Amino acid sequence: MNYKQNIKYFFGYILLLVSLIYVYVNIIIDPYYEISQNRYFFNEKHSESIYSTNILADKLEKEKYNLVFGTSRSHKIGSETFSGKKILNFHALYGNTLSILNFLRGLNDKQISNIENIYMLIDFHSFNNNSRHKDIIYSKYVNYVYSVTNLDYYKFYISAVYMIKNIFNHNFKYYVNDYGVLINDKNQYKYRLLYSKEYISTNDKYIKSLKRIVEFTKNKNKNIIFVTPTITKKRYDELFQYREVICNTRKNVLEIVHEMYDLTLVDTVSYNNKYFTDPDHLSSKGTFKILEFLERGHGMVNDSKHLFFCKE
Image (cartoon, rainbow, N blue to C red; front, side, top):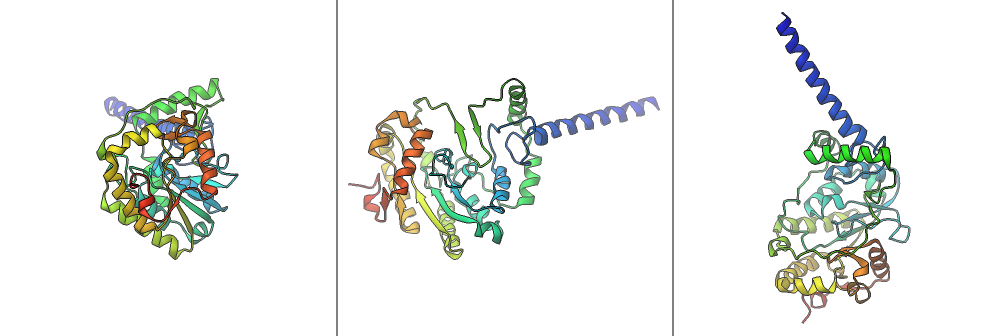
């Protein structure tokens, strides 16, 4: 009898421990900001996951916002860098056009009516089969189930580290705010090696999804603006070996979207590393400067012969 009772106690303790760990990581800390809008011990989230879109979508139900869909190359676009516009930044979807399409289709009428403009980054890797290109079918309740079961080693690690940091230090230098925008005071430039040709490959599935996004926004009478990322002149020269692949992809994109802002190279920005954190990512100052160009209509292209990497 004592043996059976001990077994019950053992499994009871295990269940209690697992429950406490779950509550600690996913509810009290919630480092990816997937479940609750409350902060508790964790003042600022270190990262985000694709399921962070639930929290941002909830905001869209209450107020009007401009939506930014992109990658890490657009993660600094927020109210502070974009003329005070109210921004929700969905870079957690990593520019996956199928996931973006599913997200838009999953919004209700109120959320759709609260969309002011959509800004979409046409990144070099927006249409490839990269492992980070995870396709999601957006549903608030399905995503909630995924998020509460999304317990991985890194999530445990940053939960522990950042709870300790909250105890001793509340001055965060690097975090993603409540609107999906990366706040980063570390703007020192550091060179990164060029990625492989496979990284900029194209999967027709994602091109077709882009076409459906355009159709969706047209049917819903929503304005969508397409923009290419700005890179350093050195990175541009390095990427020129992939010119044919990049040019063909951008030609296909332009046939679908009809016009886009090609800001790949901007003279006053691309030649100065102070506007970048690495060859592919703008600093906060660089982001602000590029968005000024965007608002002035700089770089508008509606003919593929004027696209960077396609020019003779």
